Length: 210
Image (cartoon, rainbow, N blue to C red; front, side, top):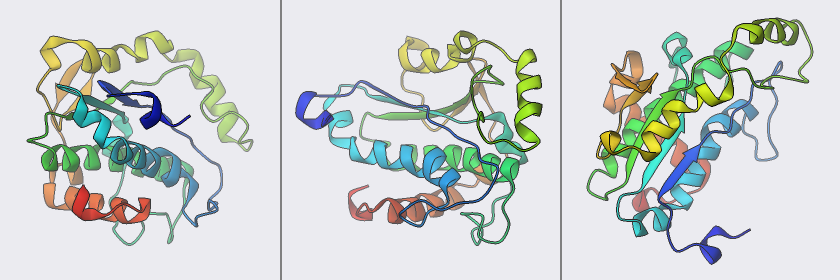
């Protein structure tokens, strides 16, 4: 469906897709698939829907990140796990990228009326990782017994999308409906801007329009 053909505006865009893989593989476009799904897809969707977001009086973009971003290493020469791939490390890196680009784009769109924020839902009991086999899937199946239900995991997303108290906040990171300090590379706006520039190039958008 062509959203631009059916909708006049978008008030809330929630980017919530995510995946985790046992082995490194490339998409048809030559992009590492964890990075493509978890990071570049929401970037492309957000940029592609900018006109409809601008048409809303106060649009909100909510990006699902994760607390594991704190464990990620930021290496500009390994953004697609070219030098080293690890299921958990590459996933954590994409969650760091989510936060970094959220902050950079919030800075660039400061005067547009669009707010962008990132949050961690916590460890949620979903089908995440199913079908990847290996040793990690049974481990995740066991740990899911201790995870929170999806309804509880969605609470912060709803808070950012639909509450007056979160209106006007942009470029922030939330856990359990509370704003948290940003740590590591995500706290360096220059690094965030550089990653946004890289992401824009890989999604095929004109940097001058971002």
